[in-house]
Image 1: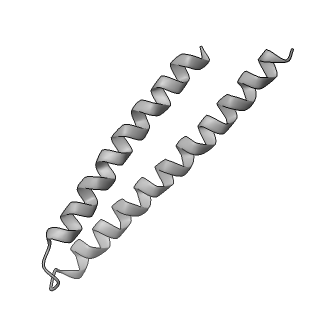
Image 2: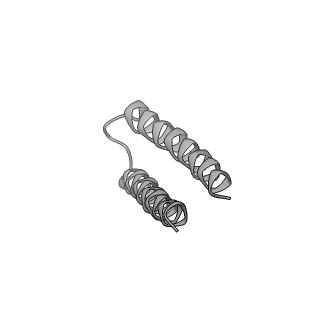
Length: 73
């Protein structure tokens, strides 16, 4: 069961990394005089991706803790 959760977390992490790369490339490709709404939207999306990274990290830590608890039972 823990292996399936780990594989799922890795899959979500890969999707978030691809999303981060796309957002970073879009931000770089846009001209400096871009509309403020576009800039705000990119900042919001990047913040959401960072929050996703944090949630995955917490999930992996909790999963590892449960795995260690089960090993030492």
